[in-house]
Every structure is written in structure tokens, then in C-alpha cells.
Image (cartoon, rainbow, N blue to C red; front, side, top):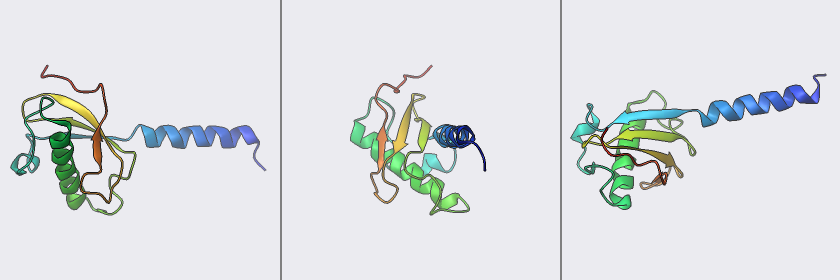
Length: 111
């Protein structure tokens, strides 16, 4: 029987691997640039950014090989908006059309 500390290290490894999963999406790359509601950048309202990000997430899922398991709750996205600004967003509810929220303090103007 393995010692308890082995189980602890396994738990730490699995937790770290799940937390480190970040998807990078550039809104100017095909096919995301053709979406209707992609906001201009971090200066857009939080609601508009969340809706634009939700559209990108839906497209990402549709194009993946496993759309129902792609991007579960807790996944973070690094989005580069059409104006070159970027921010990190988190998926909070994969079943909701607006289940993506911006992570406060991660909005960055164009570099």
C-alpha cells in the first residue's frame, strides 16, 4: 500500500496540471475574426467582453474533437482582442451562453 505522502503529491500534481491549462485565443485569427459580437478590446464593457469571449469559446468547442468536454468550468483563456489588448477570462459555467467572466486585474492595453 502506498504511503499517504505519495497520495498528497499525486493530488498536488493533478491540481497543478488542471490549473495550468490555459487556452490562448487571438480574436484576429481565423475563424474568430468573423464573429459578430467580438468587442474591440479591454475598453469595451465587461458584459460585451464576456459575450464576445463566450462566442469564441463556443466556436473553439465546436471545432474541437470533443465539444462536450472541451473547456470545462475553471479553464482560463488568454484572449487577445482585435485592438491588440489582452486579458484573461475564466469559464464559470460551460452550459451558459454567458458563462465566461473576465478575471479582474488581467486587462492589458496593446503592447
